Amino acid sequence: MPVTYQPPVATMRFLLEHVLDFDAQMAQLPGLEEVTSELAEDVLTMAGRMCAERLAPLNLPGDAAGAKLVDGQVVTAPGFAQAYAEFVEAGWPGLAGDPEYGGQGLPRTVQIMLDEMVSAANLSFGLFPGLTRGAAEALAAHGSDELKATYLEKLITGQWCGAMALTEASAGTDLGLLRTRADPREDGSYSIIGTKIFISSGDQDFGNNVVHLVLARLPGAPAGVKGISLFLAPKFLPNADGTLGERNAMSVGALEHKMGIHAQPTCVMNYDGATGWLVGEPGRGLNAMFTMMNAERLFVGMQGLGLADAATQAASAYARERLQGRSGDGRPGPVPIIAHADVRKMLLSGRAFVEPARALAAWTAIRMDVADRHPEAEVRAAAHADVALLTPVVKAAFTDFGFETTVLAQQVFGGHGYIHEAGMEQFVRDARITQIYEGTNGVQAMDLVSRKVTMEGGAPLRAYLAGIAADLAKADAGLASPIVPEMQDALALLEQASATITAAAGDADRLGAAATEYLNLFALVSLGWMWVRILAAAPALGDTRAPEAYEALARYYAAYMLPRAGLHAARIAAGPAAVMALDEELF
Picture 1 (tube, rainbow, N blue to C red):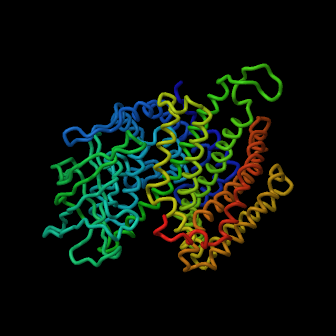
Picture 2 (picture 1 turned 120 degrees about the vertical axis):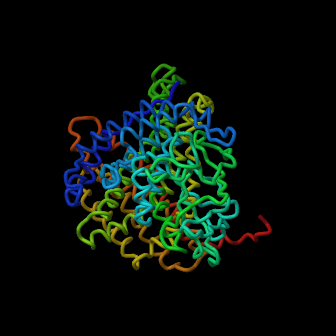
Picture 3 (picture 1 turned 180 degrees about the vertical axis):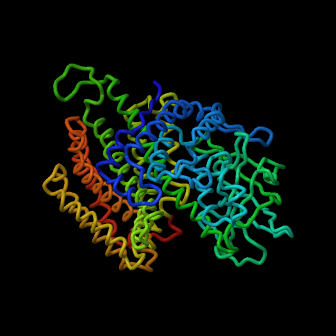
């Protein structure tokens, strides 16, 4: 039974036009004044068609074939190279890229919606353009004019691919331990020597260049993160005319054997005196790299959302067709398993997460567009703070809930879900990495409680919570009114937990024990907020059955999912004593 994917373009249009006031907000942004939800729908319809018809069919066979290393050369899964060429020819890599360098200049909001669909269709494939875009953003923000002239257009348009080389065997989250070095040469370039692991898209056989952004140490650099610089090192050294020249001194030592994303070449990269160039200032490598990392963290959140949607779609279709048992309403059996309450709960949990998560992602992306382009500095600063606050939440919560959703969808299939041919176990395996890479979800939670909650004296957090409260007050008499009391209770828990986190500043154990609980509480309230906004806008859908469906899903969210807020709040209030009580030697 093949897994099919239906791009949610109509839902995306509804969110932009009726829930998030996209048209009016874009009208205020220089360069985006003429971008409307109708235009976004047209673009996303074409993108969705490619995702459903070209990328999704490659997903299951790509997982079975995997990427391979043959005589030192990466060989991607059958069909990937041709699909990437078509993806580039259609202009999708540069959708939100700078027009000065070949991009189309559309909003990040549209880009993030494309990211969701690509991830749902084929996560292994989506990492190629996703990482390339991150490399382009880091280079655009920190690269010299010469490097931009040579590399930026080819990265933005996807003619060349990008990769980020951070991790080493002894340096993962703590990058201050890395050992790769960069020795200066007389011509201004550097000789990069070292080995990196877990390098997604480190190489491929697409016939183009792969531009690596590599963290390394200069001679005499101090220990720790302050001694790290960022370098650009291409697989092929470009000729003066921009064509590919000689092979750089880098190689793929091995491909990682991993749980999921089998069609994605995750490489061990050896830099044996590879020629590279400094990006940004010496000793400021992490500052430059985090331009790429923050963009990638939002991208990873969209991966979790996309996989959750694809898995839920497949499970819903299966549940309507699979006959088993008798229903509770007295119908003679066998009946479709969607008639059984337990199966319905699993499906509803997926839908009740996916719909508001898509809205929250789009809200965050609109704030990114405002932060980039709004003519008023104060408005840009407020939007930037919102994005900083939401980035760890989108990355961690979307991937945690996304993984949970893929497991539930697999469970709907029963034994068939455990078999490769059904495609469900691949969703589970692929979703698992999203909770780990680009900063584990625990790291995201610590970032939220130790930095984002207290930034600017807590003003961005207070403004965000006040916005939720205002929408709850307006919704008290509308379609959302049945879930407003539960949301008000959950918001009160989040406000109290926020005060606890703020008071615990500097207490590593208290913050560490509370971090993931607080992030999940924050996410539950934020998703509930989006449900309130969706229900407020649902009457605009007219006499379709969508308002009825949204109302049922929101009620399920309030009754079965939002109560988790109480659990997280109780754990936050409990403090670290029970967490830290057991002596290390007794583990």
